[in-house]
Image (cartoon, rainbow, N blue to C red; front, side, top):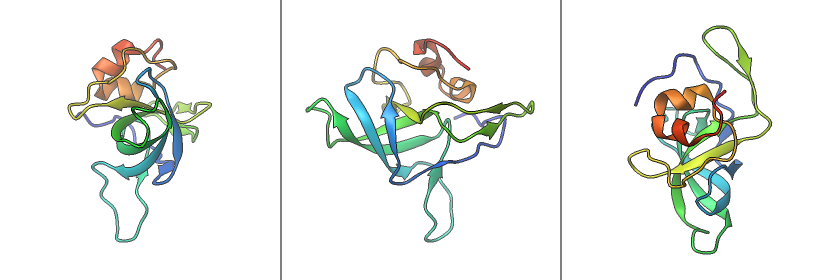
Length: 132
């Protein structure tokens, strides 16, 4: 996986609920783990834009509810700074469901996607309507 150009502000922690932004059938996700998180003992893991998380589906179609899935965070409300000095923040927290190889499960992405996600996951960028 490619590294990010800027240091991301990690604003979503374990237990946070986020919106699912694709047409896979899930509507609301709850974060239960953050992949590749290296932290201190007893510290709650945090995630930001471009991170891969493990989620539990809280709302959605009956066949996908209560399942444990992987997702990539595409938007976050907390402001973060890019390498060129620009500060970005979105209206909501959102994620896209992916499989173990990083390919999206849905066939379309409803909202905009951050540029940092497009750098790491090219297939998500092709499905997105707009990259900011």
